[in-house]
Amino acid sequence: MRGSCRLCNNTAELRESHIVPSFVFKWLKETSGTGFIRFGHTPNQRTQDGLKLYWLCDDCEGLLSSWETEFANNIFHPMNKGEKSSSSYGPWLLKFAVSVSWRVLNSFVESQDLPHFSGGLLEKTNMALSRWKEFLLDQSPHPAQFEQHMLPLDRLDRFTYPDMPSNINRYILRTVDIDAVKVGNANGFVYSKIGRIVLVGFIDMPYPRQWKGTKLHVKSGLLGSKHYSLPAEFGEYFMNKARRLAELNKSMSPKQKQKIEDTYRKDLDRAISSETLKAMGHDVALFGKNAFAKDE
Image 1 (tube, rainbow, N blue to C red):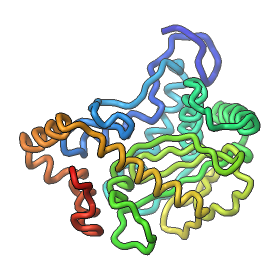
Image 2: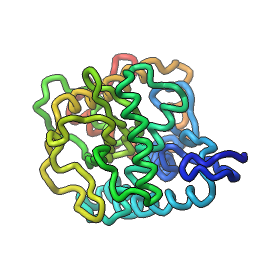
Image 3: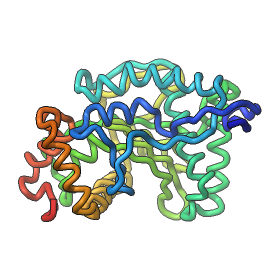
């Protein structure tokens, strides 16, 4: 497909580009109990890959791919395997984070899926996309006020939160999720959750100092093994995402539930050793039989 590259604006043959990098979905399939993926908004449909769009030319696809490889090898796979809880990084991490936030936000804009954004926030959205594009193309030295924040996650063994979702470990450990979020009257951010990593790209966040220990730096830094402090509103948003996933999973049809059970029975060794069942086990350890809805 020939057209204008979304990043460099050159007219060229366009590649089918992933919004969330392809290695994330490959990992999700390989570590699942069935070998298939189901997304929360379509629980009755199983798939093999994430959203792809004809967006980028070969050069820009290669540029993004180089940062994805660094992130996958140095952070994503080691942390999801539990091999390490912290990792030093170079300039590639901020480039990777900006590339994901740019793709996710641009996908919401192009699909006209921002009805909850006000006029002022839409203006800031365009400013963020423009600045992120300039940074990716080395036309700006940093993302300016449109910061990138990254939070590594791990399973919960205990909690004090009064209304903890009973699927919290399944959401933390096994979910890929994207969103464009409006906070209050006009503030907003891009939310990208890829396994145990949460990435937040600021669109309009007037109190950035409420986010401590999460900001990604231009040249280098250390991800993990530090004290994090986040706004209470973000914590509640995160919990609501887990609750929403639980509600969507309840809508799965009996036919699809039986299909999952049949797939497990065909390869019990795979099912038992999968990260899917391990995540379920962590929720059972926390909540007992309440980890599941009555019809699960």
